[in-house]
Image (cartoon, rainbow, N blue to C red):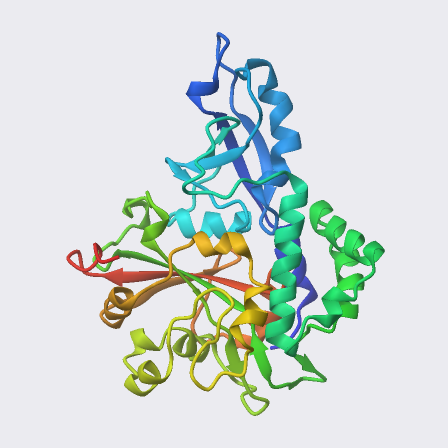
Length: 351
């Protein structure tokens, strides 16, 4: 299998989710109420970038006030800095098409979500994640910090417009990948964001999975995967053993690894960087996602992986990990992995 597949990368960039967006009933001031709007949301894009398409459809019915736009799915406020495709893969155990979301222009839940001040906030979040990824890969983020304003603008616009060719042309100057040259895999660290959701181990139909009603029910783990040149045949399963050693019952790994907070060291032997340096790079909004504690560790030890989704694909555990990283990573160079864990009913309440 080739390390890089233009067809697979194109699949990621062209991936879109049909969205049916409703205005929350509390903000409807006209009769009849406005119909929902149908839009395509880019998998690698972000919900706030859809606002210019959505607002004109609902503007005539909004109550007086200042806009502070946010979205929810079945009552769960959606984290605006998580890519649309990741939200969909994580929250829709059984894919729902179109995906029915609710948009709000008032009543922002400040206790759950950091406000998004439009496209500039999303761009800042993206660039910050890119810096963090660069630090993980290269040990510094000078290549991002030294980008010209013109290149930074063009890189962002390529993402907003879904222009893969422009993105690849500019991002190639950042020297963040691919993992191998001439089929030789280099050593290094892979930026990974892991989202772990618990479902009943006896569940036969994912459509019956209990909806997520609180972000406390999602374990978010930011843990790079350490790779070595001789591991050219590293599989996704091997990578998952590094990311979630607890579920593979490898006690030696459990004792030598710890869950990492956003942007902090991975384990006692990590040379990732000091906390002050990394703290300046991390995405501030991502700190809202709960950090898994000891209860989560104990729960994971008694769980098993039921499904892994990356870019909407349910992947086989034997697939080469390097192929996954090269072809299915997001444009901020993180690989987002959604993991559905099967747990017994009495364990699923542990948080």
